[in-house]
Length: 467
Image 1 (cartoon, rainbow, N blue to C red):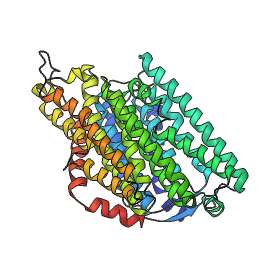
Image 2: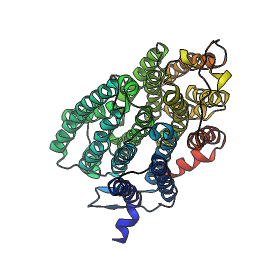
Image 3: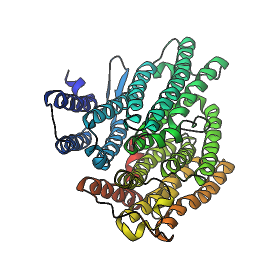
Image 4: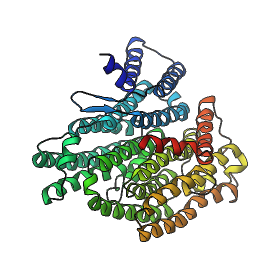
């Protein structure tokens, strides 16, 4: 029993927070939004701090659940991102009468992601995936008075169901071939037989939907645009980040014998994601759609790191996801404030933004510099390590395409910066008032962009855990 509590400390703590919020919602007829948000942010802060004291390794439930120091780190990264999203959403949730329900749904999805990360069995992985996916559809529909929010939820649940169907079909076929769903057994029996490869490709397709890799990306922009910004942020970094962690771990540990088969798949998906993401991002006016295609392009770079197929590739992926959380959430944090207070979401709305909101302008500019990979921001070092990992396979064509796409991405990121600093606007967005919560979230994001880029200890620590 002691081993159970030690190994599942993070999952149990998250479950306890969910029940506390549920009891608060049921026991108190009227809870002030300010009190509820303060309580929840304190609990999430405790959850984050407690996660750094979890270092135990071991397995439970007949090796269906396992944990290690590296998995604890990945969960802590997701905990950090969730706390930042909660702090950023303060203004929006203050005006929403269902804040408690939003947190319960969000933390339920996070719990599902934790079980996905710790799964050593495809069945447990699938259960965790569904727990992480179904509440997200309800979250996408949380702007209850907007039709586009309901549309986003419908598109997400249909796309998610299709992806889950492909994944489950692949899992069932793999069980038929291997006679087991345990990762250790699959690793031992993995071979390039036609049926095994077909089931493996279906599983990769399921992963592709969840991380929005081209050509499985068609749901992304519409769902990002229609969902509340807090949910868009969560989809963009937490949901996508967890799935990237799981996919990388499964490919590197379970299907390492099929490296030469999945390397080609990853290379093709990387090239398609970078090119399509960049070309469509150039055309966008709505910033949420813009960031959707930007995230698709970023997935292409992540897949280059995955294609490295070694410890360097694994480390670079985890390091980049950490940087991506800081960078993307800094951008979404500014957009969240402006959208909630002023109702503005297009690039043209941000013309002359620097004149009235210099602090927010600089936060957004630093975030965009990092997403573009401009030194000395962390995004530059993140993409550098990803490309370095991919270069280890001597695929210089892939590296050249990645470098050219980095140049293309500079155009559309700098387009927003130009609009904020240089374009004239007779009626720019009025000064946006910020409370302590959004300020703290932005400080964490900007600090993370600077520190993770300039201090080498972060990457070295991750690499030491992967080894």
